[in-house]
Image 1: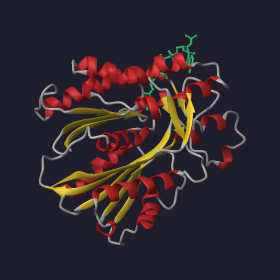
Image 2: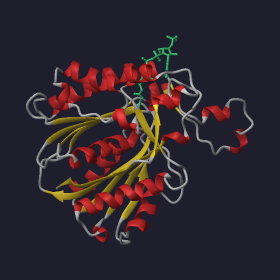
Image 3: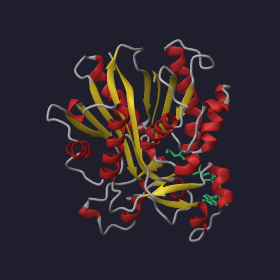
Length: 325
Ligand code: UT7
């Protein structure tokens, strides 16, 4: 059996931060950000009522309502986040209580930076394929504004906050086909140290090292090289045609230029690569489920469509999936 997406939901914080807002305190401009990233604005958590756990709960409730299921029947919750507000309990356990799931349910979180939602999705598929569960809730949620360095114009302008969730149900459809890749050796270009290391609090530069550091150029090169390659390898491995057998390519929303370069390298019409980065920026592990939810609500996504999902980010890690929606 395969876990098919039967419900989607998302939560986007209310506060909008525009490119002009950044230009009011940083040496940047709407023109530069739009041209180099495609981003016009992003949403930022209020950090009080829009903590990651709260955004995850709201996205989960919306996905449950969309699927029309009884939350008591959910047997597995996996939440992907690099920026959780709680270490213990897991965000999955917090959602578990809030949405009224029974105790007959496994809960755990994963951290795989931007590809976190796909890592959680693939982990859940293992439970479906072995026949252990019939219904799962998979969430991607981030509060990147807690980790952004707002004096570094090269990174802070990219990030937004938000959550996306999917309900998966066991169905006898094409199995989830995927490739996952990683390079620990290339990890240095995207990093943040854990803040809770009290013995190091007085170390020079420690505070800054707990904020996101990114070598944008390196990450950009990595993405425009590896993402088209892994998508090509996916098509070869599972014998499908990129031009004719895929309705949409749902890529992690990190930079419009990365998405455009991928479409160009694969020789596929750019219209098959939907984007919402202009409104939400890079929401890391939440970007793919937020985009899927938006596409379902505006009617672009229809049951039976064949999708390639692809994500990339810190680790470095990258992956691609071929699924039936
Ligand atoms: O989610 C996972 C992974 N993250 C990504 O995928 C991000 C990948 N990288 C990128 O998206 C791009 O590298 C950035 C958007 C971060 C940067 O764009 P870029 O075209 O690679 O710019 P750059 O870093 O090469 O910088 C070019 C110039 C520099 O000035 P000089 O040295 O040429 O004088 C930067 O200082 O642009 C300057 N710059 C800016 N100028 C205005 C960098 N950030 C800004 C800014 N506003 N916000």
